[in-house]
Length: 300
Ligand SMILES: Cc1cc2nc3c(=O)[nH]c(=O)nc-3n(C[C@H](O)[C@H](O)[C@H](O)COP(=O)(O)OP(=O)(O)OC[C@H]3O[C@@H](n4cnc5c(N)ncnc54)[C@H](O)[C@@H]3O)c2cc1C
Image 1 (tube, helix red, strand yellow):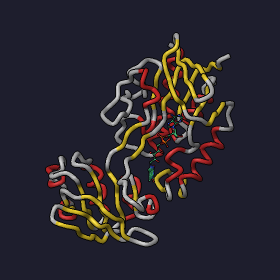
Image 2 (tube, protein in one colour; image 1 turned 180 degrees about the vertical axis):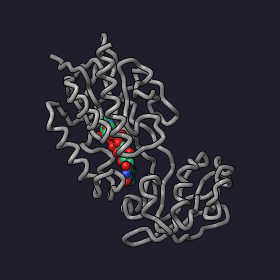
Image 3 (cartoon, protein in one colour; image 1 turned 180 degrees about the horizontal axis):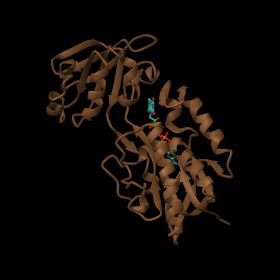
């Protein structure tokens, strides 16, 4: 027989676990299914923007899980293969089981694109970052590179320029689409755009010390302490394809202020949404809002 719930939350990162805590406190019969307990937040080498905590992301996530376990809530580790409408509710399938619920919260996060060059993995957390808002602060008064496609995010470049001494913007494009916006920044003097370029090699032994860049005019080495990868991201929403949710161009689920998606009964929280800020704090708060909204929606 299929197990039936009021709510199934997919994702065990900050958004999913917080949604679980709030749902349990509202006495909803809830199941949380996730691939990795802690999600992307486990990879934060040093987190200092969660008020009241400073340390490794994985340690904060252990505390989240302990807190979730204080409640009468089921947690299943596994990958959801498919979510679809079934009668008035939803069917959620993992590889070996089917579950049913009246509502679902999708909190599955995003995959940030990497540079795809040898040695990249070795330097993650040792100079390579995929989140300028998160890690820019650690590069105060130092030189960094920001690697992006031509359709760049000027806010990330500005965030880096405000903190660091110098930002080299490496782009494969002939011209960056946000170039005119960059020119308006008071910090524009710190930013040097290097067009038609690709990063060929990361230099350094234990940590990033520089990069080798192939440009239209030959190869050059730049001395930098940090490399920020801004190549875009893709939200994990493929398993929910049959729901025909409204998505943006990076597959992020478009939600309203109550974290409702375009499909009644489907809510979303955290990085997987079209939210502009992607942080542990915002993912958690969206998880709380989503659970509260599910509770209200079930009463309607
Ligand atoms: C290098 C780096 C540094 C960062 N530093 C900071 C920082 O200093 N401060 C900060 O606030 N934020 C930081 N962030 C951002 C922060 O990690 C994210 O914003 C946050 O983890 C988002 O939480 P989430 O729950 O939305 O998604 P995630 O943490 O990505 O969790 C997604 C969850 O969904 C699960 N999942 C995905 N697909 C499926 C599926 N099909 N079936 C079941 N489960 C699935 C995953 O296993 C995971 O449990 C950083 C991110 C990176 C990459």
